[in-house]
Length: 121
Image 1: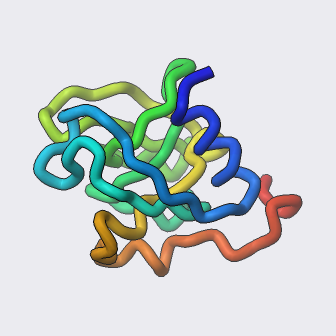
Image 2: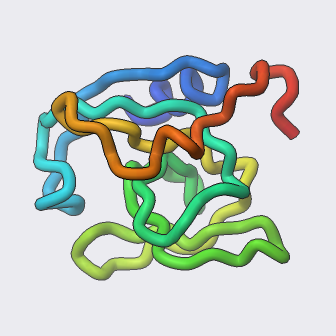
């Protein structure tokens, strides 16, 4: 289990989590070791360009939503360099990045899931 798996479990449980991811796939939106805050998300409110914490093909990523398929309740996830990780269902989208180094991400606050963790479908 990787570090992002543990973060995903906490966010799926209803917590907003701050952590410092490493890697360069999201530069310049997120640089390696910048402090990010991820809150539980209502996947039905997502838009292309949102940064989400999601599991795709067994791996957890903090990457961009690159496409939406609302009819099938799934989103496509990719990095900020053009690589597509793949499609994943709404049940595997755990959170949305609401801030990077204390700076709020535009529009993210309105997509935070406010229901109790037991209420998640």
